[in-house]
Length: 156
Length: 270
Image 1 (cartoon, rainbow over the protein chains, first blue to last red):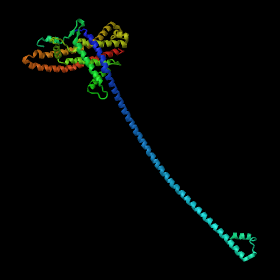
Image 2: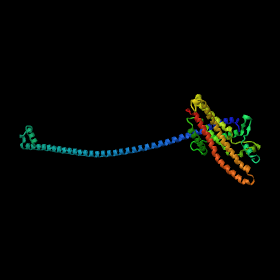
Image 3: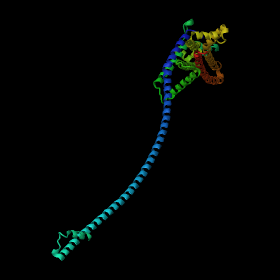
Image 4: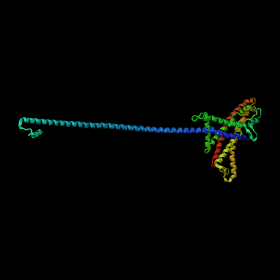
């Protein structure tokens, strides 16, 4: 019932027990609990970050899709325009070509006509000369009357 | 046993320590052994738990220990300003150890002494199983806490700051002698109230258990036992349940006051 040396023993026991409890119970377990708390906080923030990133990615995907659509529209309309241009071009070219061919054909025809006329003229002239020769016989010297004949030929 | 000796002897027998030595150098063997065994139990269980700690999914017992730790840590955070890595383990040790020592009170009062008497073969061998009903244990803890209070008072406030606390507190510089006496009483009452509160509660609780045990022992003779024995069981159960609250509350109070006192020692403005 009275205070005695037990007090000293109990003090030593108490101090030792504090040391042991800190070493085997408090330190490892509180560290573990802190670690867990940190892990949970990290996990939560990571999840939050992931959610945010997903939102961003979705938004980006939407934008990309929209871009692609407008681009496709552009390409399509451009192609259409280009197609009609080509058709138009071809039409013009074809018309020109036709005109050209017609013109050259015309020219050829004219040439052919004039050449034929020339041939005829010459043949008529020679026929006329030979006729005159036959008529006049030696009176008409080809050399002397050449000039006169030439003008005659031309006038035909 | 109670029939063989009188009521007073019965109670006195139960409240006497098993001792070795003379005078001051008396050792209360039962107190020392029981408290040391309980301390060893804490360390043993903690070490076993430490080998299978789980970070992710703690099992039942680890959850239980973690909730105690959390409880203690919350109390330290609330009542203790600043940071000192010693306070929380100290508070935890007090809470668990005092609770376990108090818990010895809930073991039927005659069970362990009878076992001890059978083992030793001495039918009058003393055994007082509740270490906290021994003033030596409670005083040992409160004196250790007091030593820490003094240490941190001097460490934080300096020798001059600590002296100033005695000189100018609580009535200012014109009442220095009164202040010294007042502060001295205030400081010395801390370990004394800590020790005596716990000791008184546990001693009284033990005494009530002894008195309840006496009902069955001295009054239940012959046919009267039919009435007294059930009453004893009923009373014992009631007091046991109530006392379960008391031992927890006392362990908690000892812990919280320790934290508060040490917090005051760390408070520079005081």
